[in-house]
Image (cartoon, rainbow, N blue to C red; front, side):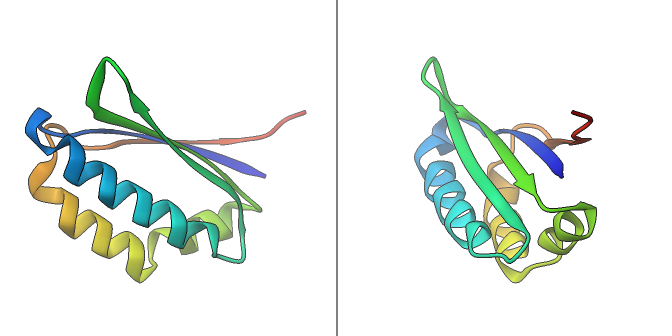
Length: 95
């Protein structure tokens, strides 16, 4: 199993637009065959900061996710809204 955490920091004025993009991305991602879970969190004290917590069956499923149309569309839509490049970290479960 692979856990992926992505931190997305948008321009403060883009918080609502970013939320809409993240909600659509999560819904589409949950439908992927290798997705075990995909959650999006928004910081209440900094609503322009988002965190995804994803669980994928294996690395192949996580890699396939990154090449889906909905990920490409989300990146294209959010790109102009980024305040910093997203930080994406992947971990494999050891216990």
